[in-house]
Structures are given as C-alpha cells and as structure tokens.
Image (cartoon, rainbow, N blue to C red; front, top):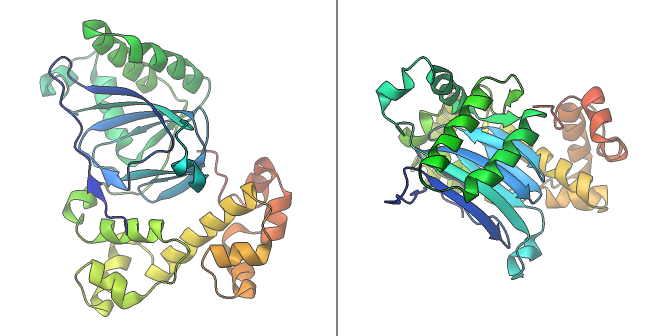
Amino acid sequence: MMRPDRLLVPQQPHRSFDVRHERLPYFSNPWHFHPEIELNYVVHSTGMRYIGHSIERFSDGEIVLLGSNLPHYWKNDTVSSQLQSTPTAEAIVVRFSPQLAGETFWDLPETRPIHQLLGRAAVGLKLLDPLRTDIAQQLHRLAEEKGLAQLTALLHILDRIALSDAVSIISPGYVPQQVTRQSERLSRVIGHLIQQVGAPVCLPAIAELANMNPSAFCRYFKSQMGQTLTQFVTDLRIRHACDLLTRTDASITLISEQAGFENVSYFVQAFRKKQGVTPARFRQCSPGQMRAESGNFFQTN
C-alpha cells in the first residue's frame, strides 16, 4: 500500500534551495507532496507520471514545474530495473520554498512575473519546445554552479519560463489546498489505487483507508474528485491499459486482465467509450493519429 507522504526536503546551510542530479536504478519517491516548488527534469527514463488528477506517460527530456503541495509520483516502466544496480533513471530536481527570497522580493517589478508563474504552477506546468530544450541546457549548468551564481541561475531559469508561452497545464481543475487538508483520507486512497491499479477494489477496505463507512466515503469521494470511485478506477485502469498497449506486445485479453478488468468484452466497451477507439485500433495508431482520432490519452499538454 502506498501512502502519500509529505516529503521533507533537506535544508542545507550552504544554499537556500535544494538541487540534485540523481542517477538511480529507478525513481524511488512514492506518491508524495511537499510545500516546496519543484522543477523536475527527467534526463533519462520512461514510465507513467501521476500529478494531481493527471495520469500521463513521461520520457527522456520532459521538464515540469510543480506548485506547492501538488502531489506527484513517477513510476518507471521496467519493474525489473528495481533489481539492477546500474542507474537507469536520471533526473535533475530543483526544490525551493515559495518564500525563497521573502514576500517583498516577489513584489518587485522585475520578479513579479516569476511570482505569477509560481501561482500558475499550482496545477502543474509542462515545458514545450523550444523552451524545454533551452531550460534543459540551463539546468545542467545550474547543477554545477555554486553560491550566488547558482541562485541567480535559478532566478534566470524561472524568469525565462515566466515570460514564455511554451508551457501547458498538466492537471487543470486540480485544487492543491485539498492535499494538506485531506492527506489522511483522499490522498491515501488515491495513492493506494495508483499502486494497486490492476487489483480488485473492495469498497469497504478502501473506505476504511479513509476512516469512513462505505456510503459516506462514496459521497465524499465524488464531492472531492467530481466523479465516482468506480469512474475514477475505470479511468485509471484504461490509462494503464493504454500504457501497456503502447509499449508491450501482450494480447488484448492479457492486458485487460493486467489492467484489472474481469471481462474482456467490458474492457473493450469501456476503452472505446473513453478513448473513442478500440484497444486494437489504439495499438495500430501512432500517438499523433491517436490525438486526431480520440483526443484523450495522448494529449499535447
């Protein structure tokens, strides 16, 4: 079971924010959140990422900016990589307090666009080219800088992003204030469902995670998520099936089982309703074609 954790970002006496260039067998942080803003550059890795209400694939070169307390989780493709000692996941991660330089600093005319950017990041922002390529190069340099040069480099990066239109929203409609208030209920449930995406869902057990009775939990979940638990789980499983269809040669029947559907006929029906095409057609098409035909999973954000 994966419980959403509040990640404690290390406070280092020799600098005002946290920067790390990680080379790991796999991304190990679970479904978590933290009050710090996060700029995350996946140098090398592929898999599924979960940000707020968004579930999408990630791959080499992706850069996202996450606002304060926005929950997130990167799940690598290859489970077996967790048993390897050779690093297969590489990322440059920058985390800093929204009060990095004090409230008055963000009120300056020169820094006001950055302050506005940090507010927009509450729902997550994905960098698009040519901005993404430019910021990737700057993040490599940032990781090597020290002292004041590193701080000014970070401000320059944030200013560059703030003044660019080459960004897209990751999780529209997400309300980050829910995270701290509901961390013992909603986030615990979502984290469990993500981790156990293909497993049977037992309503009494899920409700118990939220310390509620089943009927009260169902009303609560819909009020918070805007959809029923069944709808949420079905969407989650279809996204997982899309991932398996894209990167494996497994049969439709096997993928249906791995995604948690007991009946392949229902899987095909639910998949077509959500994606606009059958699983077989989805597999045949390129991501570009899928955007044109279904417009659901392979979004351009």
